[in-house]
Amino acid sequence: MFDISGLRHAYDGQEVLHVEQWRAQQGEHWLLLGPSGSGKTTLLHALAGILKPAAGRVTVAAQDLGTLGAQALDRFRGRHIGIVLQRLHLIPSLDIAQNLLLAQYLAGLPQDRQRVDEVLAGLDLADKGGAKPHELSFGQAQRVAIARAVVNRPQLLLADEPTSNLDDARCLQALELLQAQALACKATLLIATHDQRIKSRVAHHFDLGVRA
Image 1 (spheres, rainbow, N blue to C red):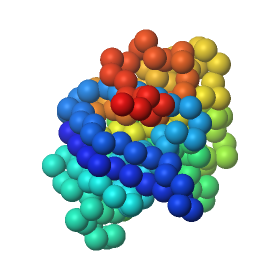
Image 2 (cartoon, rainbow, N blue to C red):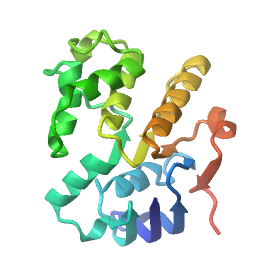
Image 3 (cartoon, rainbow, N blue to C red):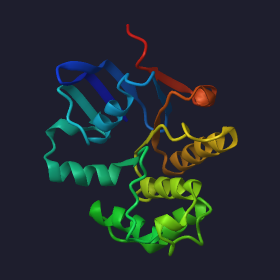
Image 4 (cartoon, one colour):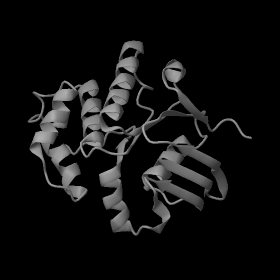
């Protein structure tokens, strides 16, 4: 589903990421492990096409991201990749349903309110479509971010440290929500984390702290 080869990236001349080879199949669930500063977020951004690496190749759903121009890359990301970032980036002036409809619009897809309502209901947010982001609890806002990430039925679902600030019960709930939504979309799930609590609950691990 995604294939990384010879990936390198540096900031201010200091290499922060080096992945020689990594391949994941459609529908697999992975943890991207490593201590702070090991390049987890950088790698997620490369997989999402947000960052162009200094060297190497990143292929998602058989598409080499490096061959796409900016506009085509934005469109591809919107249609094929769902992202839950550490900062949720919900648009405060829009209500929750509008935030999800905007994700459809930006991907060049028809605005499908039925799909929006379906996703919100599946995350126990059926009554929050008309609410503004500031009216939600943190847990509700995080679920909205997951809803926005999956509303276009992505093939790849990425999440950056989604459990790091949660207590044990909410940590498990957040993980189960991501796994359930990935299964519903038949998406490959990749969670970047240093949270040791969830290691045993995800089948595949890739550790940036381990060098061959």
